Image 1 (spheres, rainbow, N blue to C red):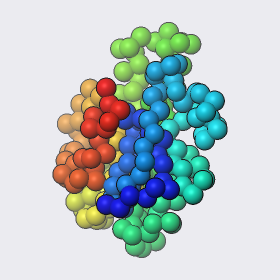
Image 2 (cartoon, helix red, strand yellow):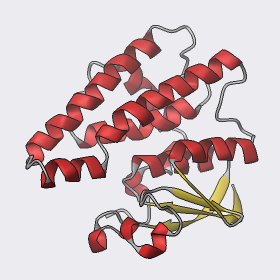
Image 3 (tube, rainbow, N blue to C red):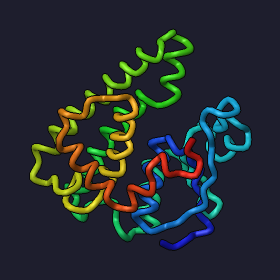
Image 4 (cartoon, helix red, strand yellow):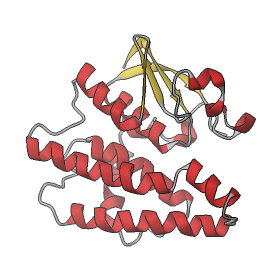
Length: 220
């Protein structure tokens, strides 16, 4: 793995979006500098004026490269794919790339936004939902997405050891952090054998295992 001093990742150990980028960097063999942005301490360090200069949304991750700041994890993945094309995060054929993106977007566009920290804080502070109700909310939306993903993966000849074929793609990069989140909220994963198999396979690879939340220096 090569260290690129020009790449800085603003990250938080439990952010699934940052988790995706850590996996991608590992798969591409890029070691970056990490700056840790704690989403709960100090009222949320992502809201500080210093951080907002890099990411006006006040979200993690942000990738800084050659003095440019890039937010949104999927935009970062696509950027890394263009600047560091090997090994690729996308299949080689047009259909395969579309399918990998479709699977990734189920997680990143449909499941994740309904379960992120801002949403949960709003449910607590504005609507008075207690912890049990918020967990039920999270389980509901993850379950809907996982039902669809299981059908999409189990029913396709294009599913291999990973979501598409036998090498990791953007789809696995999005799925594995969401599996971690599902376990955090105690979702029963029994109905999703294909998701569990892919998750288990991915986590045997150092690129995924080394990106896991609880082995990050800022975990705690």
